[in-house]
Image (tube, rainbow, N blue to C red; front, side, top):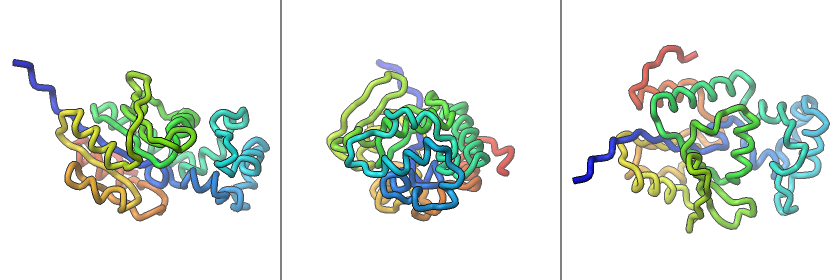
Length: 224
């Protein structure tokens, strides 16, 4: 008789306007960042060049592959809602990981671009188990396995299918999914606890960090 696998705690995060404050995809590819004069005033020349020249996804050029993408500190800080919020998100994710909670991202953005943004944000990729999203051409969905360092292609673009994959392939104790899009999490309720944010309202606040820690029975020391 095979020994039973120990039960695990898992959480799936949306990326834009859930982990981040601003919507990276709309900001870059729909021109919302470039139309924000206050933001543009704070950018370096490389960042301005990106906004002016790479706001059309159909151009075929992938942002994370161009040299200018290596130096976008102001865009990074803006996307996360400032340095302080970025520090809080980084600390929160590290705390989840240190408590043996498996962390995943499921996004409608591109997997490789999200990975690059996380690196630029100095969020260690080691805290994540899977990152699920589109391939570079947005023609298919991928899952990147951080431990195995390999991609798996999905037959569907639905986030709920990724949530099902995690559910079926792991022995789950506590399972949660957080997103700012009610259409995404409505179908996940049968498998896990869903935590809804108001759509594009600036991402998770510290109150959500505390709630999630309490959900996983983590000690809450400082919620400020």
